[in-house]
Length: 206
Image (cartoon, rainbow, N blue to C red):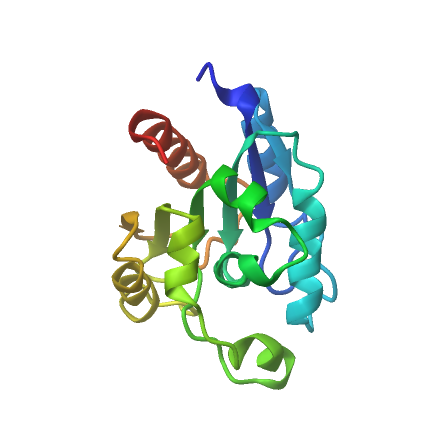
């Protein structure tokens, strides 16, 4: 992929995760082999996440992206939900939406929930609604990857509604089996999905 040096990828872990858990360090390394600029920030207070702190962490990571690079997001579980919230509120952030918005080209959401459990540790996220029109204003390409046997995030209850709400965008939904909540050290299907998203955007444009 000869345009890889003009692309930055930001990988966001989920609840209880970090840049060093599960497949994140492996995926980061694999994408860097292809020449991509990759960031995998450690989001704060991961066991008791705070919405504003996670949004600020995403903003700070975006400031590290090489100037004029196209930006892609990869989010696992709550990390994917955080991506949707960030996109939906980009116009309200401290970043320049006019500058950053045109650079955001796609997002891969892996086992990401549309509705969070209303528990104390997630209340800061669960009581917030997604702003679907704003999300699609800034990100026109999505890939959704879910597993049939996920005990936490059912594709029927989460992936299908997300695809419906993203009706103004190009959305690729892939439902696999045997991966549960994608808690593993290596996951080639995630790497494949990421590369397919990148290739599709390069082929069809933003």
